[in-house]
Length: 280
Image 1 (spheres, one colour):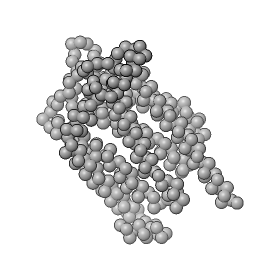
Image 2: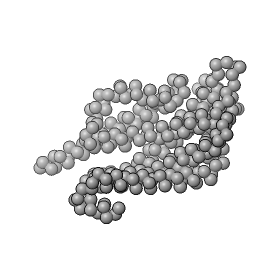
Image 3: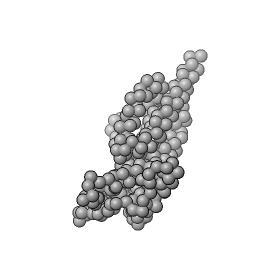
Image 4: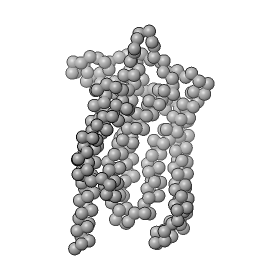
């Protein structure tokens, strides 16, 4: 593997099969890292489930306390002030709890190993970049990891409790009691956390799209209204169908979009300066 990389670095191009072999080993190492961290999460079952997963189900969750205090301060209804959410979680299949344990551990392993997975991805694409491109993208792994973890925290402390509070207390009739299946509850938490983490990678995506010339600041400004509609649609998908929750989720995404415009502008400016320097 190392020999192949050295050969490619001195000017000889790797064949398509060589690239596939290289990619295969990067994927294998990434999978091993996810499995290792997933194994740690599997062992820490009590913390993962009782503290993290079922935390947003409890009335003393930090988000509910903050929203309750804010609602009382603003004189609104105490919709976020409660002693217990009116639903129970149950497992209705023989392997339900074990399957939930396995898949939750894998999800936790992916989240923890995300920086390493990015590093493996970077090792795969970096040989195809020029030296100056590698230098300007040096902080890619750190910045992308920070954005991902911020998104994960946003999904856990904002999207998840809003969704659980709305859906868990929603009733079409007092004769119907909410008994949620364990897999359904975990799927909601997992989707909220992972989706938010990936959405927060928007500035990184825009950076690379601007580098290759697919996206420009002018395009981003021109289609800002359409982007806002898409953001609202995404917010409606990952949040309960109430306007307040959608706005809370949409605001940071819109901010990320505006930041992406400045990032694309900076990329284009540097490219123009480099082009002028080469001409002179």
